[in-house]
Length: 100
Image 1 (cartoon, helix red, strand yellow):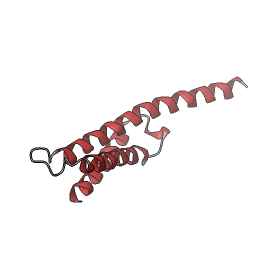
Image 2 (tube, one colour):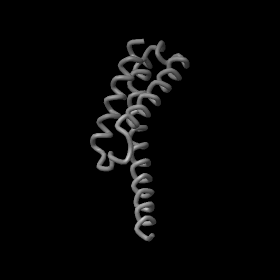
Image 3 (cartoon, helix red, strand yellow):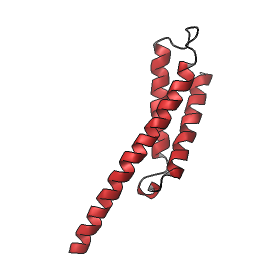
């Protein structure tokens, strides 16, 4: 259970760091990348532990490291996709409003 706690804390921190480094972070909330990161990290930890990787000699690092990497990658992916999409939609709405 300690490994899940560490995974949640590290992925949440990674999500907040990704949000802080995004230049379009005003387009979405501060908690979104952290929540996606924690969700992906926790689910992947649960899957890896249920598969028995936490108890195999030589593979005990998988439930510790892989969920953190997957969570951070998910935060980056959601920020890249959502930031671009929201900026494009906001620009289209602004253009439509100015055409009136």
